[in-house]
Amino acid sequence: MELISMARPAFVPVLALCLVAGCSSIGGSVNPAKYDRMTCVELNNALGITASEISRTAITRGKVAKTNVPRWLLGGSRVTAAVANRETARIERLKQQQDAIVAARARNCPRSAN
Image (cartoon, rainbow, N blue to C red; front, side):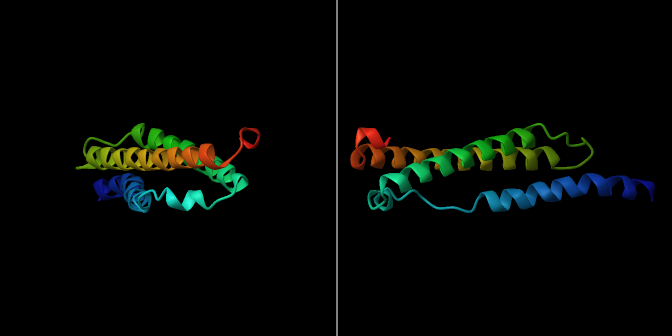
């Protein structure tokens, strides 16, 4: 009985990590054509939002990587690694999106608007 009550507190963080991992994989590929129709102000806004998301995702990845999973919790370290890998993949997608925004801004906006 005591083992079950000890297992429950460790189960909750692992379940939360699984839910976060599922939400972090939502997203699509980068479509650079949509940025060509945006104004310079919209491009600057999108660039700021993307930079914030990259920072937020990197912080989450760091917290997940530092999570102490008990050794007796089977598969806990694999879940942690999977979540960290998903966050890394999301950061890469966001960087591609940011590169597309920067390229569109360089093409469409005068130097003074950057």
